[in-house]
Structures are given as C-alpha cells and as structure tokens.
Length: 216
Image (tube, rainbow, N blue to C red):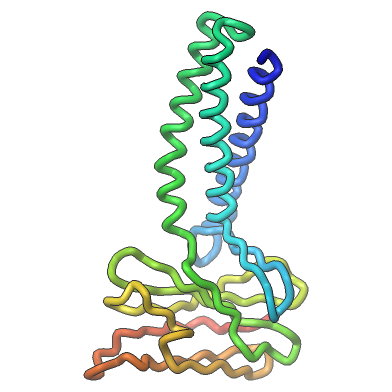
C-alpha cells in the first residue's frame, strides 16, 4: 500500500503534466493555422492510412488521467493516515477532486472536435500527393468538413483552408452522398461536387475551395 500511494499519484501527475504540455502546444502553435487546432497525423500508406487527430490524443490522455486520479483517491482512502497524513493528505484529496471535476467537462467538450469520418480521395497526384477530407457532425442539424493535403513522406496533414457545408442533415457525407470529382493540374488539386439529394434546387451543399490545394 505504501508503494501504491506513491506510484498512483506520481504516474497520474505525470499524465497531467503531459496533458498540460500538449494543451500549451495546441494554444501556441495550433491557432497559427486556418483553424485553432493542431494538424492531424497520417500513418500508413495510401491504400490504408490512419488519421490520428489531436482531439483523440487529448481524449485518451484525459480518460487516463480521470481513471488515475480516481484510483489515487481510492488508494489514499484505503491507506488511512499512512504514509500521507494530516493536512497534506486532505490537500492531495481536494486537489484530485478539483482536477477530476475540471477534466470531465473538458473531455465532453473535446469529443465534439473529433471528425466522424475521414476519406482519402483518389486519384493521388503524379508525385503521390493526396487530398483527404473530413466529415464533421456539428450537432446543429448540419454537416461539414475540411480538405487536407497529405504531402509524400509527411506524417502531418496540412489544412488547405477549404471545406464544405451541408444544411439540415447531420448525417450527410459529401463523398458518399454527392457526385464528386478530383482532378490534378500539376501539383494542384481541383475538387468539385454536386448534391444528388438536391430536390427542388435548394442548394443545401456548399463547397469552399477558394484557397489553392497545392502539394509541396
């Protein structure tokens, strides 16, 4: 029990320090891009890559911290007055409760930033550059997404500043529910899409491609 009282708080505190460091990086570097977020990572090859979002990493850290802090409380309560006694034990307990209460709403807020789907569009450029689009659930009776560029040899997706929006359908996916095309003019991608569900010409689908989607 003595070692558990030392191990649980130390490991969880380390996770919290890592979480704060990632959060500082998010605020310091992420907001310099088109949107206030760190770019996703891309692992794998074109026919089977995996996109890892910053929000996913943060959620995993938050979940591990919450479990760790709750375990710390249980260990401290079971340990009685040994080895952390008196006012210090109460201070640690109050700090743990405060951290957990702060992290639970943070976890809920962070979950809204996770894209529902990712699509790796074909064809790739002659040099192997690829356009990737996300599909996000805004939770406000609409859908939308962002166009990203994956440069050959890079592990980081690059935000093109372009995106799409669909009104009145939270389940809409531009790649699955629209007629779309992707063409390359050298190293620059040209994307176009037409809504196949556009009854009555309501034009609920908007595609924003004012920024050049060019490979590096």
